[in-house]
Picture 1: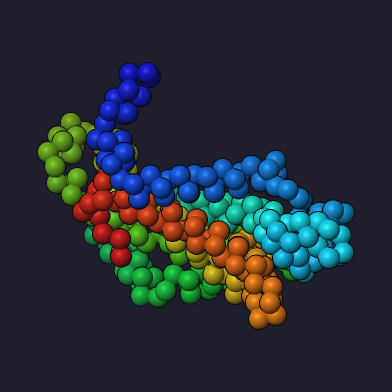
Picture 2: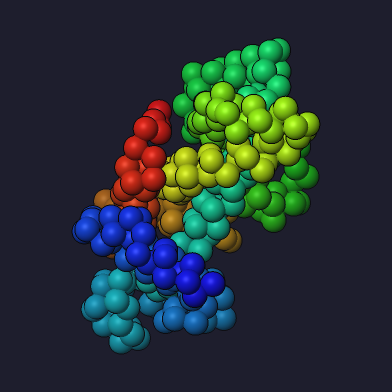
Amino acid sequence: MIEGWREFVRSNFIYSFSRAPVAIGSFVIASSLILFAIAAPFISPYTPYDPATLNLMNGFSAPLAPNAFTGDVFIFGSDDQGRDILSTILFGMRISLFVGFSAVFLAMILGVALGLVAAMAGGVIDAIIMRVADIQLSFPSILIAMLIYGIAKGITPPEMRNEVAIWVLILSIGLSDWVQFARVVRGSAMVELQKEYVEAAKLIGVNRVAIAFRHIFPNVVPSVLVIATISLALAIISEATLSFLGVGAPPTQPSLGTLIRIGQGFLFSGEWWIIFFPSLALLLLALSVNLLGDWLRNTLNPNVGIK
């Protein structure tokens, strides 16, 4: 294990990473924000969604300015209910990251499975899967996500809608983003199927399932990781867009998109900080993950095209 770690440290991957300042900066920012979100219950200055800890007199406190009534100081200011903006961002990032990672995982599982099935089966099955993918690509993914979200929300009992809203959001984003995984995995698998080691495996009687998972899948993992990293940034933005439009995370479990939607209502009344800081957090999170994904694409597999 130690020797394997030493080989990884000495690998071209680490060498390339150490010579890419943009990748290093993106990794530091993204990992820091993720760690802050995970540790939110322990590092958050306040518990923003506990009514017992809120004081309406602290409402609309400007950043770093003592409140006129209570004298309390909030680094990023407070909202209309007296909630600390910094604390709401930390807890909101937890929701955004949970939705993003879960949606990408769902899209990856579905896309990889369908891509392998299309490549291995060929014929009619391949044609059906790829035509469905082509049809879905003809529509913006956010519209597909809104459609799936609306259908799933419509069949959910009204008393349970807020409880399952996050899971419905994950399902809608995941089902709208599987196509990229399926197309790339199918293309890579089709190339691998023409190689001699696959032909040799067929000759000795190895079944198709074993060939797919033992021989082909390990060779498409780098491409899948690249798409997953870039898709994470897109999933976070999709979640924020849906929540901003009011069809995403509920106010009881606000994400960054929900916080931006709430802050937008106070933008023209002078309380700019309510929307500015959540927007800045979303920008830093999505941009850093996206830049890191671009570097991974150029390093692991520069021939992979993300459309």
